[in-house]
Amino acid sequence: MKLFYITPFIAGFGGVQRVLAIKTNYLIETWGYEIHILVTNSESEIPYFEFNPKVVFHFQKAKGQYLSYLLDFSKVLKLKINQINPDIIVVCDNGFKGYCLPLLLSKKHKIIFECHVTKYIILQEESLFDAIVNKIRWFFYDYCISKFTKCVVLVEEMKKEFTSKNTVIIPNPLWFSADKHASLHSKKVIAVGRHTYQKGFDNMLKIWKLVIEKHSDWMLEIYGEASSEINLLELVEKLNIKNNVIFQDPTPNIIEKYFEASFLILTSRQEGFGMVLIEAMATGLPCISYDCPVGPKDIITNNEDGFVIKNHQEKDFVNAIFSLIENENLRIEMGKKAKISSKKYNIEVIMNKWNDLFISLK
Image (cartoon, rainbow, N blue to C red):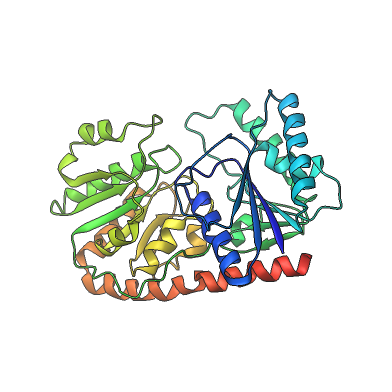
């Protein structure tokens, strides 16, 4: 079967890029799919993650602004589709043009939309105008989703955001298999993500300040790309916690870093899934997360393999951290359950669902 994926970027080290590499590699290596990927926001890129050499990349950056850009994108798209003649088109672009794609093509094409974002977007400074625009935008997106052959969402919570009945749930797959188990004896907590407002590291550092007032021998290690959105180094200085926080660049060896920690914390304002949660759980780490939209409460079973804390309840988050710091047996027990819970995201399980979906549409 021939698949044609459409995505804006492949060079970044975000979750969407990683998952695209994982899935296309598996489809080629397991079932012999022919995979083409159109990168629409660049004329040339080197992937951060490793793609199977059989993947055929196409780079075509649309030109113009607004309507002219959309028209140019439509021309590029139709040209490539005519050249490739795919069985199924898969859209991994959650921007405006991605949602519009079925409106630009004829109904004969079978098109799947991969939804990786929630409509509950929380901006750093949201005005009434922003809220109105966002509501109108999502009303339009909801209409567009109904025009796709299928819309794949990652969790049940996300499925409820759309009125269309063409949605199916297929979570992101784990991209590794961990035979060993984190020891959970270190006095280290790990967090992973870009330094953006969305990821809520500003709130995490305020929480951590309260934690080390009682447990000054514990360290918080944050892996992720720095951003101009928020200066976390400056905030660490202001909070006077620089001796208990370490910032690390993104690393392809993140799995080994999970094994070195005792648990993971996540304070995002919103997520599209929460890939770091299933990664950490697969290594045997219990996780503590705010109940942000969307993902954490679908992944973590509260009080079983981790804690899901009501948004903005800083004191409850701190107390959950205290519970794991002060009770090693609880860490170990939750870690065992976390590893078991992560098995439902094993790549074989998830990719069989994708293969079944593709076969059903052919």
